Structure formats: C-alpha cells, structure tokens
Length: 119
Image (tube, rainbow, N blue to C red; front, side, top):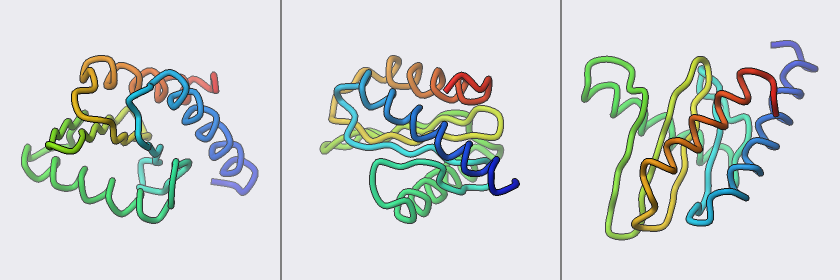
C-alpha cells in the first residue's frame, strides 16, 4: 500500500471507529485491522490490539478448520466480538450482556462502509 493510500486507510478506519464508539454505548474498546493484521485504528495501544486480535482470530480459525467470519466470547467480566469482511477485520470488547446481534451488525456495517469508501 502506498504511503498516501495507507494514511487514507488509517484515517478512514479512525473515523469508522469513532462512529462505532458513538453508536455503541456498551463498547469498552475496539480496533479495525487490515487483512494482514495491521492495526488501522484502535481505541487503545495499537500493538496490544493487534497481538490480541491476531491470537483471537487464529484460535477461532484453528477451532473451525477455516477462517472464522465472526467470533463471540462471553465472560463474567465482558464480551469480545470479532468480524471479518473482505480484507478487513474488526474486534470489539463490550460490557457484559451487550446485545450480540446488534454488536455484530454494527461491526459488519462499519466494515462494509469502509470497503465501499463511505468513511
């Protein structure tokens, strides 16, 4: 990816992440990654998000034998969601009892918008 293209992709991802944060009150944090696992935008430390998201997706892929399109893990302390769409992935951590269907819909929506160049 050329430097200007990479910068534009990161800015678009940051705007998409800001939008996701606005519309998801249960969201604790999130990140948007490229298909190679590069963090395009994150609500915290990008390296930490990238490492954790890569491990989560790798474990989900290994469990199913093929790339997972979505992941949902619930614990007593909160929930983790991951969605892949095209060459992008989004990972989010929410409060416990967040509406899974809505959270997954929001993540997919943000990724689709990014792919269409709407953000």
